[in-house]
Each structure stands twice: as structure tokens, then as C-alpha cells.
Image 1 (tube, rainbow over the protein chains, first blue to last red):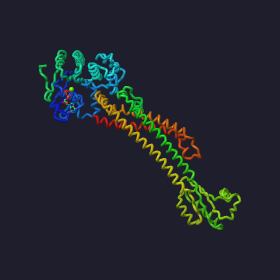
Image 2: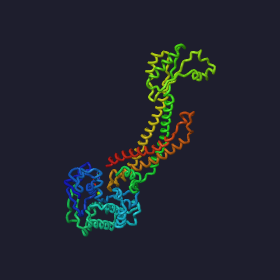
Image 3: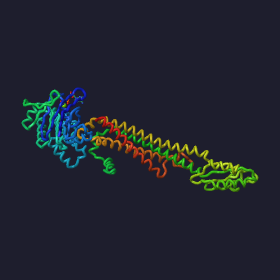
Length: 225
Length: 300
Ligand SMILES: Nc1ncnc2c1ncn2[C@@H]1O[C@H](COP(=O)(O)OP(=O)(O)O)[C@@H](O)[C@H]1O
Ligand SMILES: [Mg+2]
């Protein structure tokens, strides 16, 4: 579903990522790790087509990213749920509307979907906070709302960028639990994090591969984790 | 989707989709005010054009279809030259009828100046021939040429000498009126473009979020286009309404008042200002669409 073939990316200076080849298989669970500034966020952006490779190839659901126009990318993006590092909400809309935004912009905000929305808000534990505005939420609530928004379109893939960055240990376990549940439903998951403890606990619940960005390359991390 | 269905979607909209762009009270009010002011001005420009048009028509119609032939000749040649002139006129294309005024009619014409006892027979008064033209009119210079050959004492007065500049002035006034409407529409387009650019710039973050959740450019553009189009429509509707009320408050059109009191709408003309809000909405639609398309391309 997401494939890279000898891909490289640079923001204009030297290459930030080089010689990346990867194929995300359906139902897999990946962690993406590496020091801050290694290029984890950049890599995820390449995964959902927000950035295009400077060389090599990126394919989303079989389509070469460089041959897709903005509209084609927008539509493909509906199949990839993303939990952004800084969440990215519309601050003037209540949380529930923010969560429903992918439905709204794709013209699928039907009654049936609205019922699903309630269920989804309950699932992430925000049933009571549906009417709050995003700036009124705590860090953990924001992350859960962002996760709910990422999955509302029933995407095949969920990408999460530091989903536990601003939350305490307990909340990070809860978020991890939600992502593991999604994986059990068949979704392909990739979580970018520099939190090695999170990866260690995850390994008790799910069969996860750990990728590490080091020296611009993507490596499979060993058993030291 | 049919045009009607898409128009309905556009006007009725999707309440949820409408909210994705935050409300912007201040720009909204400015746009409304500008649209209203422009529409108000447009009503007057339109009234000016229509009044000038009516004037041009009236002057033209009153003067265009009649002219006079004057024959000055020694009295013994008068009857002969009059008959010759009538023969020429009868065979001139574009002349519906020509008739020599009889003595009584000529006397009636001169009476206001010389009193009722004028001895017309003993005075060298020219003979007048009244000419009525057809719709197409005749070729005055051709007629003059023929008359000078056959009726040496004939002078053709076709009124064009003083009719033309009046008609031309009224016509130019009408043109100026329509030009003003064009300029008003252009200015409105510029203002809406600026306002739309400001709104798009202020909402760069919103646009980024919408893109992240899979919104197409078309969807994002529509959210802005719809807003500005409706604002222009309502603003211009209010402005045109006020302009029409102001026109109603002008004194009635009167024959004697001439141009100034005739500056209003007549009959079906009252329907024309209703086009102004539609025109304003069209201008806003086009301007915002272009602005949004360009801006979204830049933000890519
Ligand atoms: N839009 C950008 N333009 C230029 N450089 C960028 C941009 N975004 C990120 N970078 C740089 O790329 C590097 C990797 O950033 P990022 O992918 O955010 O790393 P990580 O998520 O692993 O912390 C950093 O050095 C960062 O400064
Ligand atoms: Mg990052």
C-alpha cells in the first residue's frame, strides 16, 4: 500500500534521507524511531504524499506520487489516517466537528456517519468533551481527538507522529492500546516516536517491527530494543 | 450534476461545510458595505443611462421625420417652381408625403408675428412645403443637388444641423452611464479580490488543516467563493434597494422639467436595477474564484 524504491529526500540542502526502500504490508505494525531531527516527521510526510521524493520512487496504493496532482493526493489521503505531531485542529470548531472533518470535506457527513462519530468519540474517551473547543483540551485529550479524526474514514493505514509526545505514561499506554486495537482490526500502523519505553511495552501486545533512521538511512533495529 | 442542482447546492450550501472557514466579522462587514455602496452608485449610473437614452430617442423622433422646403421665387414663377419641387419630392425615395401649405396655413404661421391682417398676396413670402419622411429617411445632400438643378429658389431645411449634436450628446451621456456601471463593476471586482486575498492569507492555517484531512482545492475554494458571492449579493441587494428608494423620492418626471426631472426609471425600467445584485454576485464569484485558485496554487 505504501512503497518506497531507492527514495531520497532533501529540503534543499544536503540529503536528509537516502536510499530508502520499504514496503508496508497490510496489517503490519511499525515503529519509526531515531533521534530528534533525524527525519521521522519528514518520512511520515513522504508516506502520505505531503512531500514528494527528490529522487527514487514513492507509490501510494500503486500510484506514483510524482504523477499525482493535488486533487488525486487529497483523495488518496482519505485512505491514510494521520495523527499529526501538533494535532492540527480548526480551533473555531468543537472537537466533534474537528473529528468529523475528513467526512465533511469528502461530502460523507451523513446521519449514519454521525452515529459512528458518537461511538468513535466514546471509544477514545471523549464522549463528554464533544462540544469543547480544541484549545480547551489537555494534551492527552488532543492526541485522542487527533487519533479519532485519523480513523473516522476507516483508513487502511494509520500514521501517528509522536502520539505520546505531550502526555504522561498512563495516557501514552492508553493511546498505544487504541492503536493496537486498530491493528487488530486489520489496519496498518506506523508510529514515529523517540520514546523507547513505549516501544518496549508495545512489544508485549503486538508483533511490531522497529525501523530506525540513522545516518540518513532506514534500518531495521535489532533485539536491543 | 445539472446546472440547477449545482446552483442550489451553491446557494443553500452545506451548513457544516460552511463552518470550516472561521467567520470573519470585520472583512464580512467591509465587503457588505462596499457592495452596497457600489450598487447604490450603479443605480444612479443606470438611471442616467436610461434617461439619456430616452432623451436621445425623444429628440430624434420629434425632429427626424419632418423637414421643410422653402421656395423663394418671383411671384410669377412661384406656382411653377412649387409644382416642380413637388414633382422632385414625389420621386425622391424616403419621402412619404410632401404638401405645399395653402395660403390660410401660411397666414396662420405668420399671424403671431404680423397680426391677422397680413396681405400675404402682396408680399414676397416664400412658399413652404412640408415633407414627411419614411422610417428610412431620404438622402438630404442628393435631394439638394437635384433641387438646385430643377428648382433654383428651393432651400431644404432638414433640421439635421441642430438635431445631430443634441442626439450625439444624449448618446454620449448614455454611453458614459454604461461606462460608469462597467467601472463600478470593475472596482467591485478589485475590492472583492483584495478582500478574498486577505481572507485566504488570514486562513492559511485553516487551509493547511483542510488539506491534511483530504480536502480538494475545489472544496476549499468553494467555501470562500460561496461566502463572498453571498455577501456581494446581499450587500448589493441592499444598496440597489436604497438606490431605488432614493430614485422614488426624486420629483416626478414632467414634460416641462426636461432632463433633470426625467432622471428616473419608467415602467419596466424599474426591473433593471434588480440586475445589479446579480451582476455583483457574478463579479464576486469570478473574482473570488480566481483569487482562491491562485492562492491555493501558491500554498501548494
Ligand atoms: N519545511 C522544512 N524546510 C527545511 N528543513 C526542514 C523542514 N522541515 C524539517 N526540516 C529539517 O529536517 C530535519 C528533520 O526534521 P523532522 O523530519 O521534523 O525530524 P524529526 O521528526 O525526526 O524530529 C530537521 O533538521 C529539520 O530542521
Ligand atoms: Mg518530528
